[in-house]
Length: 318
Image (cartoon, rainbow, N blue to C red; front, side):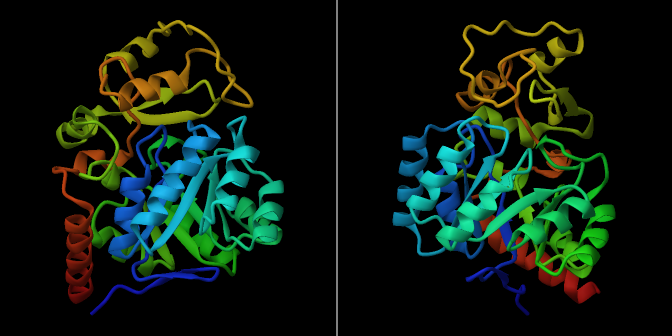
């Protein structure tokens, strides 16, 4: 018994698994290439990268695999257009966009013949995305890590969005095991997107201390943080988070103008970069609500093999 494939536009992955695009510098070419090579859809996080860095990451991933490689770029970043066009120029297979909604990106992708997949949090936005030409939508529930666009659980949203559109719906938020994948597919999803579980793999560009925080996390360690983007974010409890609770935000040394809109409580890109560079005490460690269910740091190949086994076991029980 095999997992069903996932088709998005002209691309068909052997497995119905998209690896989440985790910024800043967590989902880079080593992770994306490993997931693509294992049969899923690997994703490079473009947010927080320069145009030249994104080009280099795409070329590196493409050189390492013949599988499907996509990019995830936040609409909220100021260089959104430049990053998307660079990805299209480099022959990226799929563009995923969240943290906002852009009509222009559908045109850019259509002209390049590349599937556009927005992240949505409601049936209304999903319908709008289909109207503009989305090849699929990712429905991201409140369980997801990073910036949150909804306060509703993924399993509650999923059937509503499946009913609302005629394109593939990808379930995201709280997916850790093969049994989770089985449940989402049974509810009508064409596939799943998994971020936190892939953040804690050998090929992830997160530092060892970052991955260990996932392994050690309890449910009480998964918290909500105020983001200067204007959206709540889900992260892991640490001294930085503790400071934010009393409004003691670290000063901004210099503004890089990385976001289209920023409330400037603190520099989020700086805090995310600090965590990626190993300072998980004073940096911001984004994570999904199910991080407490992660207990090891396997290779991508080992993880995918486990997910396939767990999915088969869930099918046998059903």
